[in-house]
Length: 421
Image 1: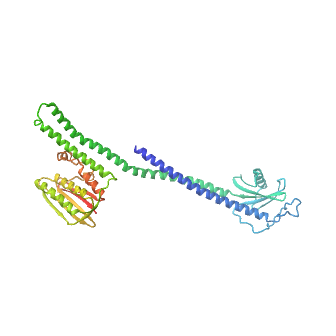
Image 2 (image 1 turned 90 degrees about the vertical axis):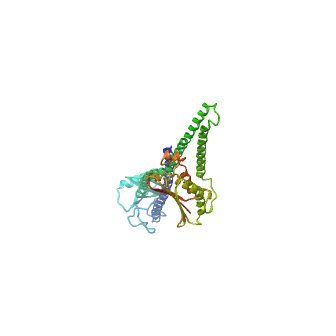
Image 3 (image 1 turned 180 degrees about the vertical axis):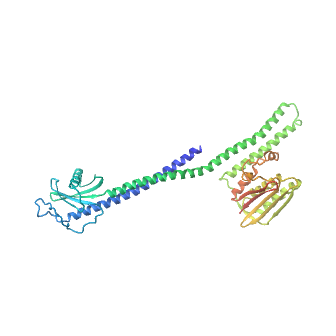
């Protein structure tokens, strides 16, 4: 499933970028092509205009058909255009026969004849052809009964456009290769949270099913015992009924915790937050738990700075304190100690709940806030725990944009910290 999702992301990304590159390259090429074309046409017409301004504008008096005779001297009629490419001019009579040529470069007679033949075969006043691996453009000017044909070598310009296509192709392929691996990297990173959430959901469902399976089995077994002794009085069956009631209460607590976690995960559910006195909230929880702690012969110390305030929901934050303090009492060793401190830390308020005991191994510290996670399953079940308390505390702290973390020294103590602003 996730491989298909990643591949869809890759295809969409590559297709989008490819289209954008194609449009960009095509735009650049068209602009370059039009600029080159305009430059070529400008050079061609400047040369042709220069030739027309020569002595043959209105016919040459020394020629019966108006065609100027061969003149090896400099051409008249204005400044000669700069030679940025090889060019030459041929003059024909009314039959298309070559009678004159003008060129600054020495070429074979056969070349001029071949060029004239190519130009006449096009049948247009302007056109292009290839001759001896060179690309030429020509324009025909009608003079008297003959024609003056100007030829311009555009091989260099054509190579520029061809090389531009090759460059765009190479750059495009290279960019697509780089883009593929880059997109794959980011696709995997983008999918990772989805995969993690999906795996957690699967694990959550499996753990919830497992936790519900045990009390349901106990309830079913005790119900069978009751049915097998249907003649006995309720008083005689009280033990089995008490087992059923106990497991029902455990299931109720579990389902309530699960529903609460679901509400906390729902981003649409928002609690009313206000400025509250965190010092008073912690002291109220301590007062409710103090008797229970002393009954277990646990040493209890607390140090609360007065009038420390935070932005949040009073009921939820008191629940966090209750969860951490209850957790500390459960896992404190006999005749151990529990300590609660609340103090100002820079602009934040820091709550610390610590207890002596076996501690938590380093490999468990990063996972103790996961749902249903317990470092000692048998001990947790005996104490009625499901591994949801710390998960609920973390959800509440996260909703308050705070931090919750734990530190532990194996065999000595464990401390939980909550940082709020």
